[in-house]
Image (cartoon, rainbow, N blue to C red; front, side):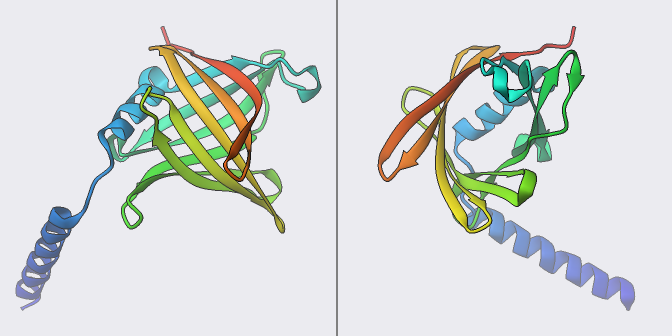
Length: 179
């Protein structure tokens, strides 16, 4: 009897999953391509730091694919004198099936949380608009990232004031390949 009930339950779940799959819109093709690009060859990218007051020589971000490339997680940290700092940020980028959009979430020190939507522009740039929450404060920040070749991309960050994006700084990220 237990085997029969287990078989019936499994069949019902499989049927529900199949119907759900047929009705579920998946992520846009650009998202899978973006995840593959960012996570290739170990997913480790570095950018020189031009701000001597930041206390690090360069920044490093490491992206890891998740669930067969359907999403990715990452961490951003600094490097000074060859030593890695603790993480500044942790990231999750994923397809939100209920909202049918790509969501980027990042968590940082002091309970800071950034959440927003990632889209792709017509010229192939990744556009990310996020709201950052820290205590009772909310700040809108944007990033535009444009690949220049298979191992380099440029990210520019912006303060978002309504519809206006005010440029703050840019970083050129280079893939650190493992050879």
